[in-house]
Image (tube, rainbow, N blue to C red; front, side, top):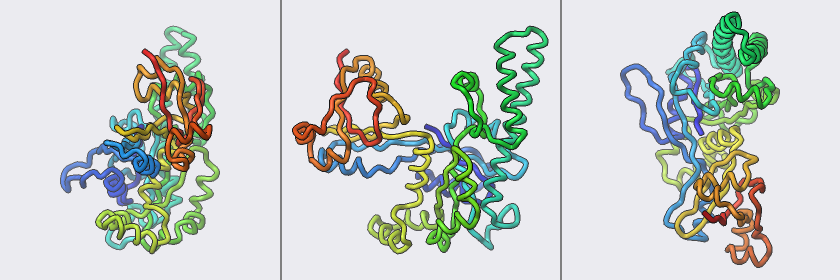
Length: 359
């Protein structure tokens, strides 16, 4: 899965990208370029399984992030043409909530709700331009030869144009499965789900919930589907990255935080994409596998290997909590917690699965 990180300039976007992925800082000179990095999805369940199995290897699920140069008001169309943002599944919009005399805000004042709405509008206008160009081409094609598929696509793009002209992002538009199939080869950024990562100062993060509410961001997200909200402080995360694990934990406790903000960003990105993890465990490896919510057992088997999917017989399934509580698969089998499921079984987050197959 691939997530694009976007935002205005001077919001802490690249710093957050570096902290999430572990990528080195960008070179200080030269034109800013998109950068790719991989983040591991925090999952304490893998550590718990490792205590049971002492595996040779532990593997977490991952998300690919791409950091693109900051944009200014009126520059949203530049994002549409960026090759780095092709085939992304979601966007993280880093929004600035911190004040700084050293780094002035490009708009002259800090207003996270204004910035969130501004960049959303930029994406809408960029998509509108692309939609209008496509309609022009379709009109020319229809004038030459009135093909049914061009007429149907013209109707779909007109529907999108009307929504965008009303400043409605495509993620809020209801599309049929057939319409989504027709749009598969197009890259419309306002169609992507968005995580608003609100970058706060160290003094703000203690009252993150209050700031999100008083700024209007909480209401902004609540009224819009496919938007999520996550407070984070790049300053605090940078400080923590220099500490030992023990000191970092103490620092979090002093701030009244249950976990690092970076973990929330990664996990919320994962959830926003409609993703879950099923787990496999053994002496060789304990691993989290990424699938979309609603995936069947046979399809999940294909994430491990196509041969397992093709030769699927049954899935031995136990909930993670039950396995850890009882201590072994043998104990789960005795208690009746270990189930045999068929190919149509819908996998749940945290299922520990052993696939039976024959090829």
